[in-house]
Image: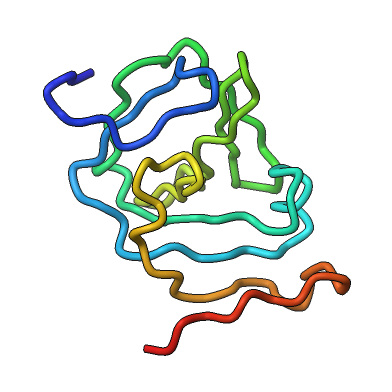
Length: 130
């Protein structure tokens, strides 16, 4: 763990805190039913980053994993339930739950994923033009 890096995000209770050695380039809105259930929301804000850009500052003992589909693990704080990231251990990236990032509002939304599973009563948020 390295306290020299500034905190980039944290869980609701503050027990899990992390830094990033490089910021995510963008966020994605995922509308799949699995994300809806895991987040308890209409969609998930996700930010893929290389695994080695993620530095855990505190809370390793609070991280709990759940295999939500074959080969995909969702990692969350077992104290407050906040989702932290998802990953497929065989790949070199983690997908941060971007709402936990302190500066998420500064990241551009690049795409909406699984829009065919979006809740029909909610219009899809428009994406800014490139």
